Length: 143
Image (cartoon, rainbow, N blue to C red; front, side, top):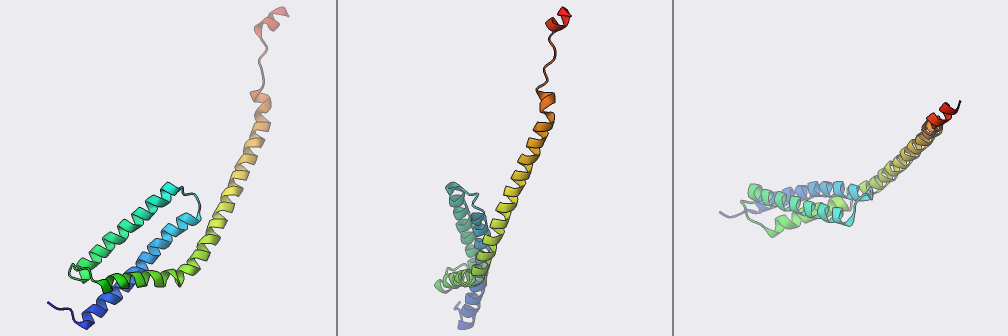
């Protein structure tokens, strides 16, 4: 059974839409990196997870829309969709993520400062109680 040009164009446009969704997924992982709480191992694992998800989704797409065949135009469509998202909406979300990550870091830093301040006050209030030493029995016996 042959593919008509209309079928190929339809699959190509669906592949572009799939690439856009993969771009959104990539932005989720990018946001985690903007938070800078990841080690190299965590980034490596995130990359592997992202690649596995992309491979599975692409495979399922090929089964559903391309009769199980991997066609080069479908792969290019996914890549085109991913790049379109990355260099249009992705630029805006990158700036937004950077702003949100900086805000989250400042809130965490402020929260830590407040907690440290409260702990210092509690320690100062209870220091006389904590450092209180009971009178020894020998001192009481002398009286």
